[in-house]
Image (cartoon, rainbow, N blue to C red; front, side, top):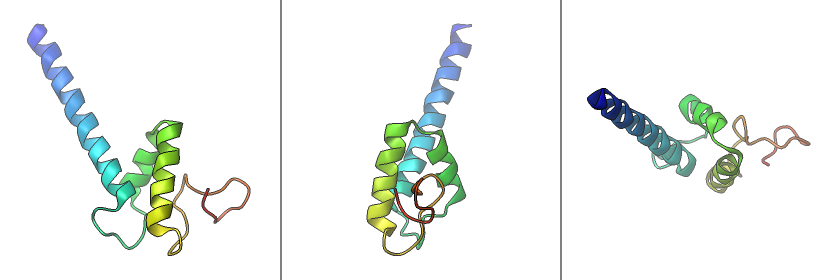
Length: 84
């Protein structure tokens, strides 16, 4: 039973680490993407807590602000099509 629990903990950390890295790479545009419309990144963004979403939107705006529309989750509530 102890081995199973340890296995599950290791798997959970691996999944969280991979997801966290993928989100960080999307937000900081480490791949040099021309736009922020990556489906995986947007889905991970929706799962993040509010303060992480705010940070992510600020980083995306710094990278893509003048080039494109904001991705889902970073749009202004009062002005659709504008960054938060």
